[in-house]
Image (cartoon, rainbow, N blue to C red; front, side, top):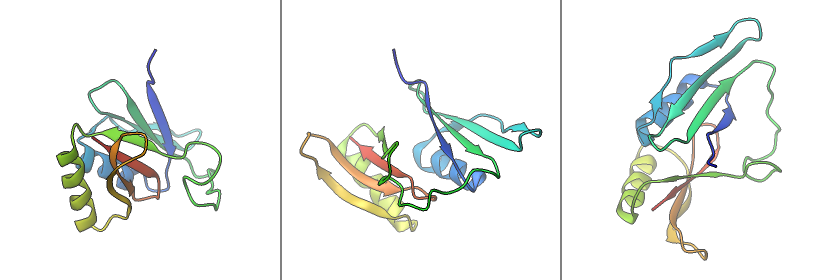
Length: 128
């Protein structure tokens, strides 16, 4: 078994798609639109089989709590292949104005990682 995809509700579908395509080299599907439900989505592929589905629908509301600190998914991790790649992408994201929520480090469970918030505040771990 393997995880096929995770799904993220978003307020700005195009901005979030651009973030993952630009910084993580994701390949985007064509935009799906269900006019009856006012639902829009993209599937983003990373070449390893796992995908992210970005979804937008007007009736979905924000929980009001800080993301990553409510029940449900706290974060997801994207493997970059090495410590240098983590360091380089962390600095690129910082230079482009994104919030670095955790500086590059080796964690207690042995991961070399940093933590960034995507444009909508989702917690993304960058791991070696």
